[in-house]
Image 1 (cartoon, rainbow, N blue to C red):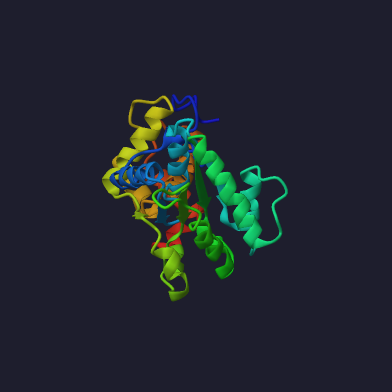
Image 2: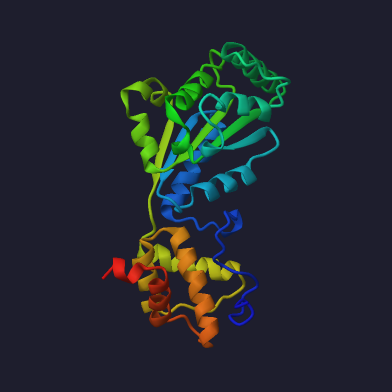
Length: 271
């Protein structure tokens, strides 16, 4: 709707995790480097961050960069209940008739891992929203999974993506044994003001516009109301483009951002 009006080929602030629109802030570069290292070394990595900071998009970028020797297996924490994680993984590994008995199920998964290892393939298990893995049993299943390894090499890589409370869960005494097996950890922070400015410029350029669109005061307000969280920036900026189009505004100024922030109920929160 507003794309052609602003000289854009597409909406630069869509909320889908499109790796081609991933802006690599200093934090995102470090997070990606650690993800790539963990996968190459077949390690377990814990990547935490606030909602909307870019964890899922980073994982998509990682999958796009992996060659054919890696087999990405993406699972989402809320989609399986207590005791279902290993069964779900077995299905994703194409295990025929996963056993209902845990010990036999572990043997089936282990055999599949070793079979892939002999073929020169490495499963990369990515669990998104891992903080929502239900109860103790879910994390305990992950701990048991890490027992499936050779004497000198891991058979797979495990990527845990979650909100900060996942780290808190792992700090509990019950999960200590599993936490000690996590070889790489990183917490992805929010964008500072300069990064927000660069983020907006980057996204606009990717969408086909080279000229500035947001005024300096508008970008300051975007940073203030979004707290530097990319998903919040996308929500506000996309709504601002729609609002600006409706007004026939050539540039997105502070008044438009304030109007959008009011629609989101943010003016009251920041009064």
